[in-house]
Length: 256
Ligand code: OOG
Ligand code: MG
Image 1: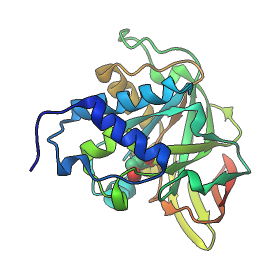
Image 2: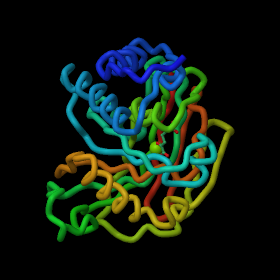
Image 3: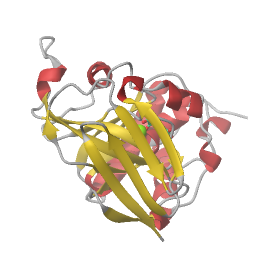
């Protein structure tokens, strides 16, 4: 039985508790009729709880900007989630895997927002609002059992955001058609930045559009993760490395 009476705070509490107690929860869609507006409201309420614990906004991530990810997760529309400073892991350091339920890692392109974006000014060129680009990896950790969710579930769950690593920033330049390689232990997956909506810069335009519609602030200093270029790999113990031709190589080591 599903219900269409939705208590945003109760569902946000459930997802937030799953995250910080490192225990999974059932799909919200099993018991509730949630539409996309409710899903973003729940996401904001989850974020509010994190900010209430002293975390600071650090950026925005896009999800499902590549066919590989859409196919892996069975979902087909671009989504956004919110990053905080507590999710940031320094390049070439250890990450404590006991923080996560069932972490996966994926290669990303990161952009840096150079100035606050006025969402009401139709003349704003989003590409002119970013000044740097870097190789990155995202650790995703769905709060849902077995990483199974619907489109609205994953939006409510802050698009599985759990942690991210950014490599050295380079002045903004075109990163079309760059080879991407992710290695985790003996597992590897390869792809191209072209998998990100044809060109990663299109992720910025998609973000600008969603940010305007959903009133998501884009502030100076924010990181934007453009979305994975390949399917994600399970993050087990050992070293995970991402290399993007011309952008560089970054790594983290999963430890328990
Ligand atoms: C949702 C997050 C998708 C991406 O880069 O496409 C995402 C998930 O796969 O659990 O971050
Ligand atoms: Mg991602």
